[in-house]
Amino acid sequence: MPSLKEAGIFGNNYYSLVFEKNGRISKVKLIRLIDPQIGNEIELYFSKHNQWEAALNEKGEKIRYKQRMVLKIEPEK
Image (tube, rainbow, N blue to C red; front, top):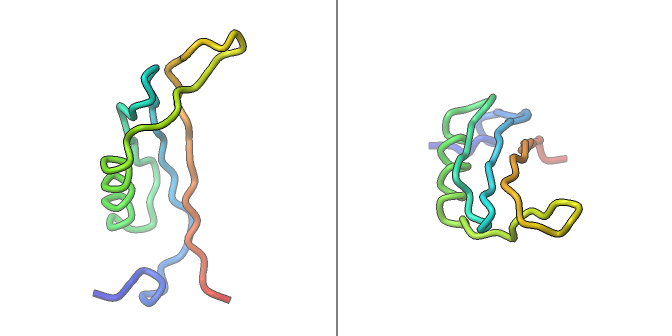
């Protein structure tokens, strides 16, 4: 199977992550993808890399946090 770039598939992929107070990711939500294969890879990556620093509020307390992300796939120049 050719890579996405070899297949001419480019664009923005949108997803969100929910980080818990302990730094673990509790949810990966795929919002808009240019190819289902990308969604599979995003989920696989965050299942393997699931321990992060906890988000802090203004008082320095650990909080639950939702982060929206964009993964851009661009043609090579």
